[in-house]
Image 1 (cartoon, rainbow, N blue to C red):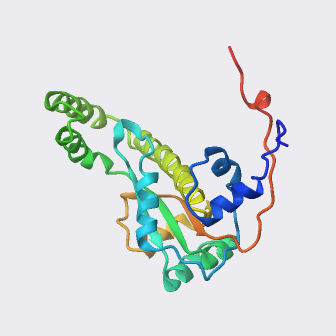
Image 2: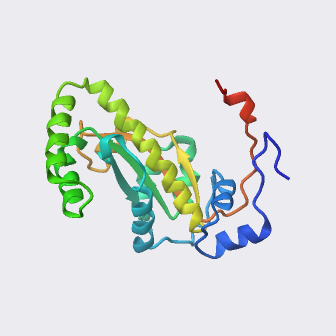
Length: 228
């Protein structure tokens, strides 16, 4: 039974559905998500399925639709071993996972604004004159926005896409763990990302749990929400 401060386990049938393939049961997906710290190392996620997972995740909203997230899918044993060296107490998640998705915020995301809006025009989602007006307004806006404000904005957007990565993975029967404990000052150079452009947000390990993760509780809604 679900209580006001406890996240209930999914039912046996719901778990079976999740572990045997794709699920569209929102409640089962959300309630079944756990932060898993040890995975079955024999389970590998294909590049095709990982691409589909990321395509779903990038349906997340972002400020003026700049989509400032960038992903580095770390899946080879060599690359995971390199990452484990800067992941401190999170090495087990890194080494046993099928892959680790490193999420970055792109500080030059506005460079893609014209391409994004032009695509919307081509698909009939946006009139050309509206696109031109928006581009003029946004160009003026972002030329004056302080760097730290833009940085905070795009990092917030990476949080939105990261949650969708974890839910998309769970819908496919996989488990995840968001990881903040790693050396963010080294990962950009270590994996050849453009320094000064890409800001590390988090790591997300993905795979099949080797053992059932423990249940956790949540504060009741009346402790975290107010109505006025």
